[in-house]
View: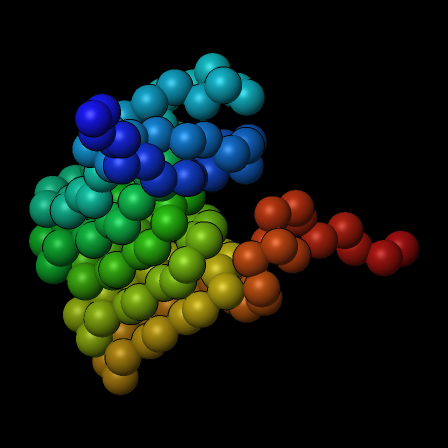
Length: 137
């Protein structure tokens, strides 16, 4: 009898295209935009200056960690500092030691007392977060 490998379904953080990968996959290439996608949980423990920080998993910015750039992740936990716009599919948690400077788009936001959040916040169901809101005018 053949064993069926465990699979999981993800979405590309760049193009929102669906991706089906094995349960142990750490990174893959999106068939929609042909870009590499990291799919494993990460902890940022030091300085990371990038134009973009995309990961289809949970990302934790440790107390001494700093991310400078656009962040698109499944779930974000900020204990250190993030400077840039954030889009999260599941939620953002800003710890009491966390500092987030930038606009946030997420279906769920948790901010502990003492945390710093400077920027615009958009909280809405996942489906409405996929495309930018067009200003009436």
